[in-house]
Length: 549
Image (cartoon, rainbow, N blue to C red; front, side):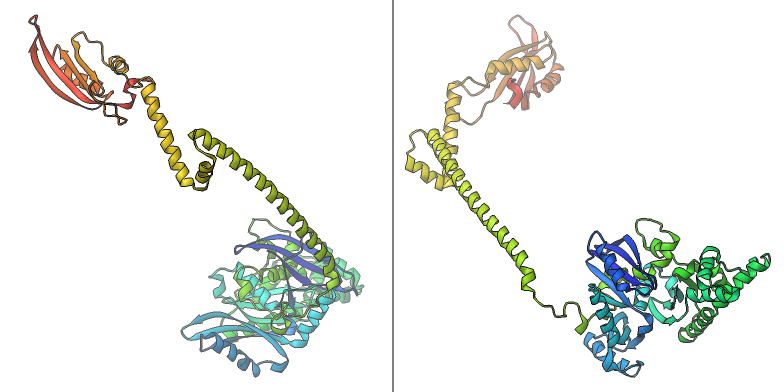
């Protein structure tokens, strides 16, 4: 499934495409569509979507942090219906606006024997309605509208391990005109605030210090902007110190807000912030992370938003990692379990599936005509194919009947058709006829198991010892026995040996042509000429290969 996260910024629309399948995902591509000041950003979003090679299956957008609020609730129940009934009651006295004009959604974060922990996000109906009206006017129909805080929560839960979640972290998303400060702890949003401060304020501070236009100050900031650390200030020139202090002066609202967020965090959850993550275009300012570390005494680093979640090992550019955090976070809200357990304001009467749609018959006329043409072609093809199959089957039946009558000779046409209708009877009749022909072949044909062939094979396998004499040789049934189809042949061999020790070796050699041979003897006998010999008799049944090929 192709998921698209859309982030409407001040100067551009940013989008991240994620390919999701079987609880796994991969970043497919990221896109940016810039727009001029004063133009409609949703038009840029529409152009971006239309330029994609493939239409996304789901689109996720966000509601600004300044337009939504959230609460983390602990309810003494695990029953789903009781939770659903209690959420509205808990919010009624806790929201800064009337509940009758509110839209809220919740998800269960965890459950234990004591009850359930919930995260509830709420906003005013007018914010959702205005957002939907704006998106649909741009011919964009988003599937989910996610609070910005929940998008960051989803992202951080993807990248933070169990140990890192034990201590709160703060995420600072610095934009051109606004900055979002988000605190995350134990997989839960704690604080989310939107500050009316951004990179433009640093530009204004530089312009005021040097008395230049903001356009020139912006160019100077992007090309040469930096913030000196304590160590660097000791060796910096006066011009470098002045330029760095001009930037720091413009950062004072941010530093004050971060100190207040740290104070709120310690008083709310009794834990101090363990790490600062920086993102957004303003985070690219050299020395910013080090300066925050010095002022807040908290480790700070730039968040590599795309590179960190890339499962293929791709490393993205520093600029892409800084600018595409929100778009990537929104796309992740529709991956795996986050899709079914996430927060979205597009529910109830604002649900995408619940919105009324007019059925345009004129628009369906052409597809219906094409479908009818396809059905007609399919019907004609099936008719022709059926007639062809009928002719082929009739030909095969005729050939089979002719072959059956040829096999049985005197079989009548009606009997042949009866056999073709009763295949088990036909099979039995064919087998009986084949057996009869095999027996006749045995009587008329040469004997495949002649005694002479057995004697030839036996003599080739016995060593040439002049002290061994074959005195008696009989293979097969007795001469007086009647013919039988059952192979009941036997072997009887009598040898005279010069010494008794040769009997065992002879037994081994005969065993290659006789199955389980039985030995009688050796018995000492005296020949008519007075010579002493040892008589040995072997009996058994010949093996299959005892007659040769």
